[in-house]
Image (cartoon, rainbow, N blue to C red; front, top):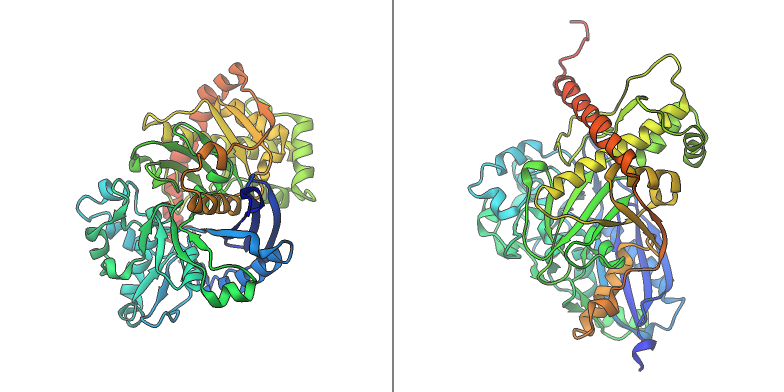
Length: 501
């Protein structure tokens, strides 16, 4: 079969759905499908899913996408997925409890304990945060000892799909880096970090590079889907795979994702870390490559919040109103910490606020303040990453927020960087997973051939005067506002409020 006739299947296990895409040998997306998922919140700060529902949704999405093409053309499968989730299996691969997800916040006490492990930050390159996997297992060990005693394997979400697809316990370095069990510099499990949570390497899947084969499709599934027993690539965590999907694969390349959360992702050719600024330091999904990542928990979601708060019918209408008014100097200031913040504060108790309100403040002002506040939070993240010496003059922008020309220009002015919009960013991690599958069966193919940057659709050049205003006037005010309010967040979290005795 000609290489151009080959297809590569990418599967992305997200939080809200499983997406599947077919990509041809030239890199074009030929078909796509998705199947929804639900999240359970049985207690405050808890976030869980049933791994069995992941597999049900995967089977549905794969069957749908394969119905749109000749399944025999598929030469490899790649996997991507939500990071950090703890999937606990017994010795017979039975699911022991619902998976604890990346946005679960129950394990803050366990995080503080892990930080005391000798060499913790040097090994992991990160702070201990409740989102990571290791503190979740420490929580299970303490609060559900019977479950913990029966744990035979701990798998990340996408690697539970791999087990169902191949029967093998395997993962990739980019996803494993988000557990706090990986020595990120060495790209191998750390005995010391595993021991800190009562585990050892027997509980872990084998680590591969994302572009390496890691198992083959089981005969039973291959027959059912009309496919060959093709290799399954190790794949990548969702952010790393998303970066591969838009060609962010070389040192110095950077990406800004404007989704529900906001992520600044920068590639480096060696291990770097800045845990004191709550920067995530992870392996990339490609060999000998790492990346730094700043994460703000609330980005585009803040626009939904302000639209609802002010009675605007939807976000597009809010954006139109903001653009018509324009951003007034010395207007209201918005802190976007609706559900806490990661970079640079690592403050689960932080909350959002509007300040500097006046009698003439209206909905358009609040809308602009929201756009600006998210931008200033992203500037915090960019500066935190750049504290390691890793800088990028040009940043590719993806995600739903990138559709607003007004907002992306404002962000270019705030960040002082050229922002580039490209086609195809909406497919995201599933496309990256398919590209990693392509590399897994074509190891001599070049990154430029398999992982090109998509076509440029727009460029936002920063205005030097506007950047100076944001950097010298608004950003310091933004930072001081958080510092002044921080004690109030902590007191409220402890119940130290004004309730009558």
